[in-house]
Length: 239
Image (tube, rainbow, N blue to C red):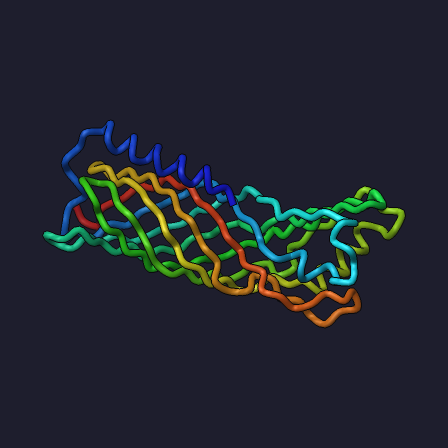
């Protein structure tokens, strides 16, 4: 995962909040609803262990778990407790995330397996305000998968087996799972409703289910981790 990007985003958010020089915050004891959207960067771990049998010498091939860029959008409800640094923000979002497994070996075979999963995410977030509108956020998230068979396969040697045929076989074996994760993030709420937020979504459950197959693939815990940068806007329920 792009951890340097996560750290840079935190720095930018802190810089923005400092430069605004605003002492006001969103009104306390007032309900807001709002919308949020932005890019996602995600990967899936341990695909190599699932796919490659241990009988193959590790010095004959190279693998990499690569990030994919996706999109998230959704809506939330917000309430800040009176004379408190805490607020709650339950939200429901759509997110596209997954990962790319890249393989190449000494026989010049190279292929990519791209997981393109879409989730409907439910997350009851808690926000802790550190100074003015600058906050840290944490909460669990349940991701309900929409497309379990969203997998693409491409290779540089289709003559060894048609890519589309292999792709279809892989789709029948490797299935996306519902995803449980924990959200950690930082952000800034302006008093006029605009919000900027950076979230690290750390997967806790197995994101890819390996069904019985003839490829000698094994069931393994493949965790989905992602990083989200979003902009949002708060709208009061009642003016």
